[in-house]
Length: 230
Image 1: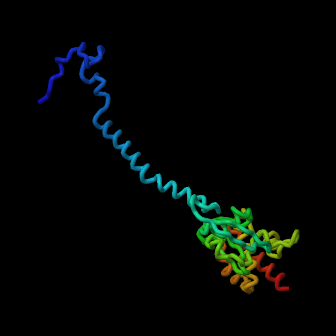
Image 2 (image 1 turned 180 degrees about the vertical axis):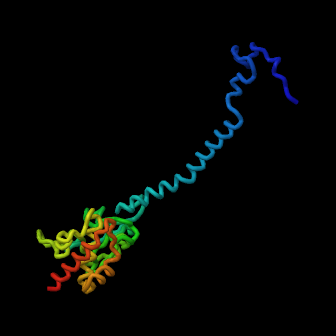
Image 3 (image 1 turned 180 degrees about the horizontal axis):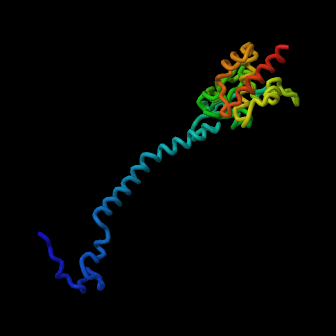
């Protein structure tokens, strides 16, 4: 049964003096839809804080590990790496990759982090003379190995033949992939896989160049191979 509010007078204590109807009452400021929307928003906020709070902490810990450091509460281990002919002693989280150890802990930033999934080759270094994607290798795996980065190829002011050939043949544009390309090319030549252009392209296919400087890269590897063989 509909209740008639016409009998409410302006001087009623529940209604302000300037209110002329029940719609003007301060108790009728929110509609039912607005009330439900407000309570739903509050509930969603509480749920999000319960669900995403632990995730945010986990992401923060992983970010610390990705930077070569140890997440909060994680144990570290001692490690000695032989890099470019010098022993380097570190305390690292066991999950630290060789790439992060080189870049973040030893400031050897010539080795680049590209895809971080072993697909582009930008992080290529030489381990005991063989090509390795350092983003996929744990630093602990290579204790005692001979590791060579782009910084260790030149002899003082004298460039490695592959470095000189890359400059001569414009084997780069932006240069981001170049350290990995050069390290890979050194190993490719040493492995005997640089006898012709088709073979060079095949055995260098793990190193991607987003600028498309492949013709210069192939020419550089071909020339360096001839010089190193001689």
